[in-house]
Length: 355
Ligand SMILES: *Cc1c(COP(=O)(O)O)cnc(C)c1O
Figure 1 (tube, helix red, strand yellow):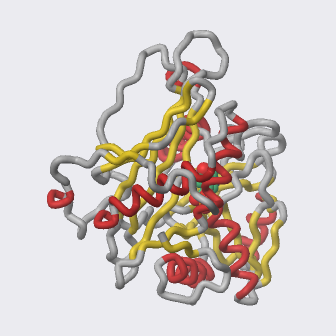
Figure 2: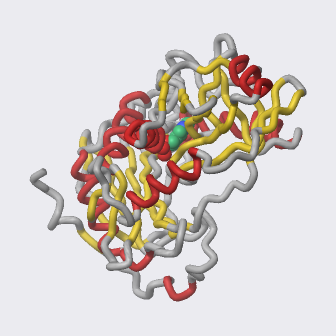
């Protein structure tokens, strides 16, 4: 793609890097941030040229609409570095396109794709040393847009800010995850914003998730908002079930986020000859399969953890444990995807993009 931004992104560097103070051998997930960030402003009816500046607090007026009406969207992606210091992204165009799908739904003006793409590349060139290389680690990238324009009238803002911040991160290890199938609260609804990566979708999840935690579970499995009969997502991850040797995941919809990890897993599983079905999954089907021993695995899928195996689930006061099995799909598929992401394996799908 011809680039209009490549050589014109203004860069203000930090006076002294804080990289020496970071313990790269003990990185948590998303807790420390790199030296610089990309910022880009929408005002006077258009997106202005992105800039790179030191990662630092920003100032907002209390009447900024983000605080009142929640116009806020984000993305999550990762950069990896191989042993030859090459930097890679995984399917970045999918994030760029999805950001604008979210923007449209939240009445946020769409961002020119090359502002995102060239801006991210410029930022990564500058922050290359911040990309950790130990097993399971990566530079977690958080692009986001929010309404910075002011006013108490409940209408879309006239000014927005797009920022990309980076966090060198260790592996996102959730431990042994027990989940509760939720029948009262919903993450999203028909006609709602569940398919968008809107900040408010997360705010609405925290309370029901806390109720589940109080009962001894770590996460919630969301069911459809109308009948609560079908499983939809596991926390903020897409969900997969393995019944006998068939891998099953729900079709994306208004309510289910179109995860990049999810669609990559579907393609890899098919290429590996695993029987894969994209169809609705009833809670009763899971219970039945658990009782007759055909439910072999359940796992969540998303950029942060890639694949997060589920050890058991609760439903109406009863607990169902997943069996310990040899060579789970979860481990095999995670290895395939991570090897592609980190340039340890061929990439027949063309997903890995060199920066
Ligand atoms: C981000 C997200 C996912 C995972 O999407 P990836 O593109 O795989 O990271 C799944 N569900 C929800 C609700 C999400 O917000």
